[in-house]
Length: 306
Ligand SMILES: NC(=O)c1ccc[n+]([C@@H]2O[C@H](COP(=O)([O-])OP(=O)(O)OC[C@H]3O[C@@H](n4cnc5c(N)ncnc54)[C@H](OP(=O)(O)O)[C@@H]3O)[C@@H](O)[C@H]2O)c1
Image 1: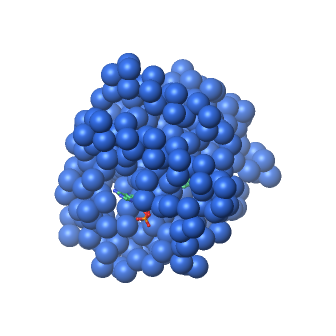
Image 2: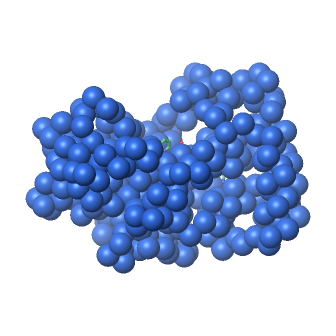
Image 3: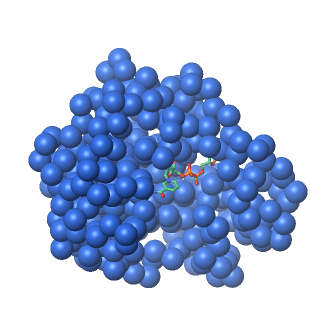
């Protein structure tokens, strides 16, 4: 595993992190025992960044079980607050998360989405107080645009942002990533496989079970899916030429930018985690990068319906 700096004080994390949204069963059924083996397989392989959230219920409680037996000490644990971003709201949410996770502190506490109903500066001040209380070591944002980050800075100098970034959604390249780079904000990229579109596994007409969020996402239906399947098939050929899988190429390609400290990948099995590991060492020639650009050129940036 490779490690990169996430925080300006020099704190490093693994370039591949474990995203735990699927561990809560939101991308199809997940047994508790499977959630535990996925988490432990990741940590045993050198992945130290584990990302969860209040909104991923019951992922936090499952992680709490997985992180027993000395695993908690081996990871950089991140969680998020959602909904009520008032000072009391973030304090209560963090205390709930600590109880669910069965830990005394998290390493990173993030605001899940920008919500102008709560002044960004006041929310960041509240997070800074939680840091002072020792309940989180660092604090940050998620899905924040430049204007949100600027407003948040006037409250406290937060440490990280967690934007959606993958080969099919590159909107953050224009402003968000350059802003993070200029201001030393650590970047955790989420949804790197576009929730499975960049695995090349799903074909037109695929039906997801009702308990899988993808059953309701328009990008996994009809013409939209047909378009992404076509893009994924072309990318898959290029990956095969490099002797790697599309999954490994999609993750490794995000790491071509030094501003990306960590790519948060979701997994449904320990085998999927093991496939991700190779991505930490993938490099690209300028010719390969140009071929990827050509394939992605006709992919609309704003593909997402959630
Ligand atoms: N801050 C935010 O608002 C936000 C939003 C979304 C996600 N996130 C974070 O980012 C993490 C990653 O996003 P995500 O989990 O939603 O989606 P993702 O990482 O883009 O895709 C994960 C899914 O792809 C499939 N997959 C993973 N590895 C594979 C492999 N080696 N081979 C074949 N298929 C594979 C699995 O589903 P199947 O096997 O069922 O296809 C897995 O559940 C989340 O878990 C979460 O921590 C944050």
